[in-house]
Length: 639
Image (cartoon, rainbow, N blue to C red; front, top):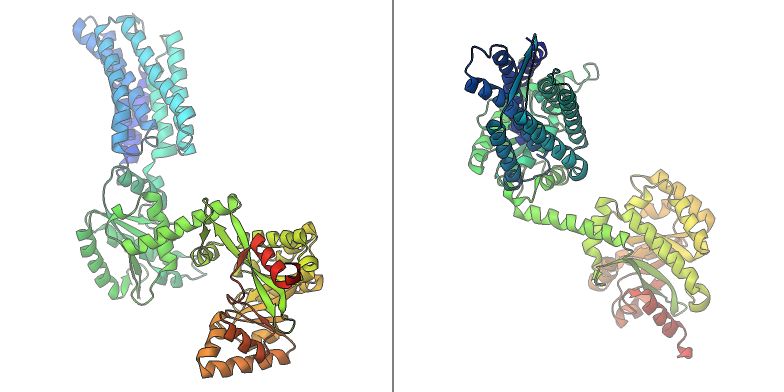
């Protein structure tokens, strides 16, 4: 009998079953469909063997039973194609309802095919060891099986662009192998290759996509980060509400010994995971950041498990393999109800954010509640708004004039960034600047502002026509960290033909602390080119008189709080006067910000402050309004 290939296929399938059940299943939907397809393939190859045996002994078997056996085999081929199509589409349908709706048509097709195959006649060929079937029933099998194969390939090529590329490629290879085997067997019925081609497809799927070892972290035995992502996506797709605990074991990091290459850490993690996996009804995952995440069915279980964990980690953790106690002080991120998140991607974003940004070293507990989520979403929305404004050129620059007390005229201005919504409305700076600084987008914004200022200075001849000697431009902390800051700014000034003396760069006292050497080199290059610097916000934050001495600035700006305190507090008055005398003794100029009334302006002027900036003169103005203001203020005779 010609069953050697089929028997080889059965042996391979049995090995796949053994390999699979060596590991505990995670319960992913794609894995369930793979197992169903693997089971159908096993049934198909088994029926292939039985049909060959039945034909070989057809004289001893009733005709009805023979037909049933042979037709059941070829029906199973169609069903392998059907389940292969369902398996390939697991990433295309995100929810259970979507899957059921889309699968209805295919279920009708496979049912119709099954009925036709059982109804139509089938014929048998037996000559020596050559055995096969033919006839209308077999032709129907080819038609429906080919239909499912072509549908699968079509879905992968034209609708699967958002799928995992590896999954998409592997499924296409599987279908092509199966189709080539069917074509060969159709042209030469003596070569029974279709069943074995199904086996090859299962082998490829197993080792490329569904090997359970691929979901296991080798160091600890927990499920890995990839498995976590797939599992949580599936839970959201099925709208299952769950709870979660993230355990951050930062103390384990201090166990590392250069001589053991991290072995002691791995042993500790492995023993902790073994303890956690003994807890009933939870799944334990390890992230790439070496955190442990527990997925739990509900809030009540979470509370019980969390209390148990706290009690366990309060005492030293004794490691049997290391033969030493470990005092671990983990901190936890608790999620009581997964429905507060929109999807799996959001939950992972927020876990990373709260782990890094909101760690409480005293309480060691972060509860993901509605308040925290709302704050995070507002930040994310602001980041998206900033990115869109940059892309659509909605970053604007306003200018606030600066008054020279001795010359009694406006001689400079401060450039202030503004962001416009798509409808043209202005976003308050306090809403987007902190987010831009935190996300790093402030560097890109700063470069845009600098380029617009240079274009504004040169395009409107501010110095010649309006008497504006220079414009102050703020530098962010992120910009101060850039090694090529000076080169970038010089190229922009050259692009617009802007005189370097028309630019004054404002730095804050905290800006270059972490990267002082890099920033000092940039300052030196820009100073040599002709750009001047001022120290912004003196009197707030990390005020340090040594900073003025060390940094090559020519102007010091008293912030609004310091200026206003001068009029309200006697001690603040003495401090400001002392600072003013010290700064003037260093031959530096002073700008007093935040002056709001005529009385304040007159007092500050008599005090000897060089420049005044504030709402008394003008709020920050759009470019056109600023030019009009300068025309009216510095050249009233032209009015």
